[in-house]
Image (cartoon, rainbow, N blue to C red; front, side, top):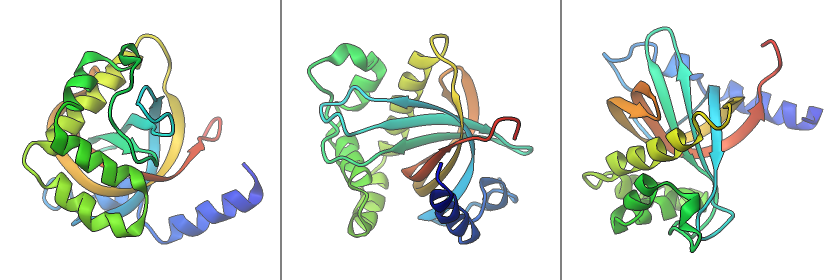
Length: 191
């Protein structure tokens, strides 16, 4: 990373809590959303969508009091599965067959302040966050055993969360954060 990029991340971190700070009182109290936070994540990156600019990031953070799953979508406007359906596992394709889930993802992926409220409303539809967790779990599990997750520091907008325990791949997490990344940086070796 360039030193300018590092400085931008450091400035952003001063304005937002770490995931440890945000969930210090979990489960007694949850942050009210939307909110932004940052944390260290063992992260996988997935494509396979009709629009190749859409990227799904799934990962796990193990904190002293809970295990956090991450379901983060990069910027794009089209979240329907593409012609090469073999690149997405069947559980992911099943989740994307729900039009309310696709609508929520379209708002998440636009990455524009005006879509925040619309994304929150779409994610509030019953069953949508559960379907996104199913999508993330299927994609995450597809990576497990074939690749090692990348150690990353992630800063993200969180628009919704889904309480567990739920499986994210082969790991059971206490909650899954659903949002859109602000930055993703390779973790320092030995950090």
